[in-house]
Length: 188
Image (cartoon, rainbow, N blue to C red; front, side, top):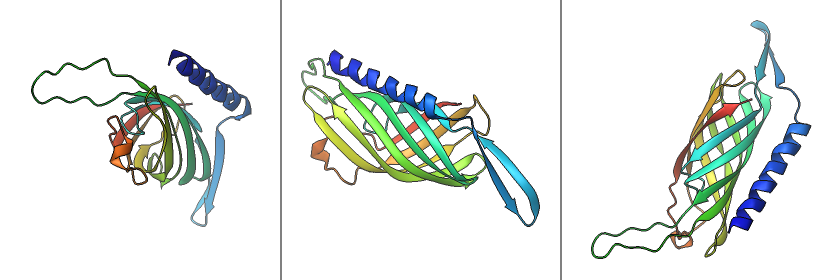
């Protein structure tokens, strides 16, 4: 299990390294209309954040890149590394359980975001690969959410999202899967 975790961390670090080499400075988007002069908006295109719940994980660390199409429209792609464990509930009797095995999760998504200034509606598709001693599965789900995307560097970003598990049955989950989650991180 430790070996798999180290391999996943190594691969995730490689993604960060490649993204740093290929990504340029923050992009500028020019919007013009007949009522005003051209408006240049500099937006940050990279984020690192923690997800709490959602994405078939208790917690995950994620890297995200944005591709702005218009000042009010962008595509978001993320990949992360997270953790989950089995749900153990006892209502009466002897409530001793063995130590639960943990699961490594690799959540990712591709979403389209539409909004104004810092506030955006998010919709798209996500997936999570879950790897553990008992489970090795891939889950696909739609993503719907709200995000606050800052205008400047080193500012906090926030997401509140829902992952409705429409493509998997409840028997597929040997662990707690919360369909709502939130993210908090920094843009650069």
